Length: 106
Image (cartoon, rainbow, N blue to C red; front, side):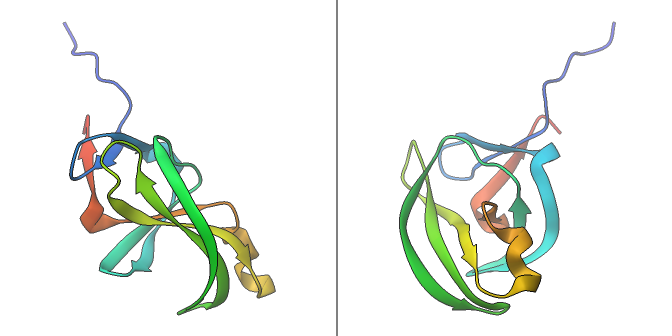
């Protein structure tokens, strides 16, 4: 009999709170504060902090830090606004740092 496995998830590395589905990965080729990061179309069980403008590698963006809802660990940020036309596709999406998430159901 085959094992039934749930969806592939990413979880907070600190408390294992589910924060996103693998199907929501837009790109694995991003850079976070602490190394590699993934761009996700959606995140769950997170709290979004206050907005601020930051000069990132790809230009000026309005972003908001993203925290695990359970343990309050900073996991990455949400793109609120991109000022350059070529970066508009990031708006509303989430960066989760690879060092801050772990895989579940793989």
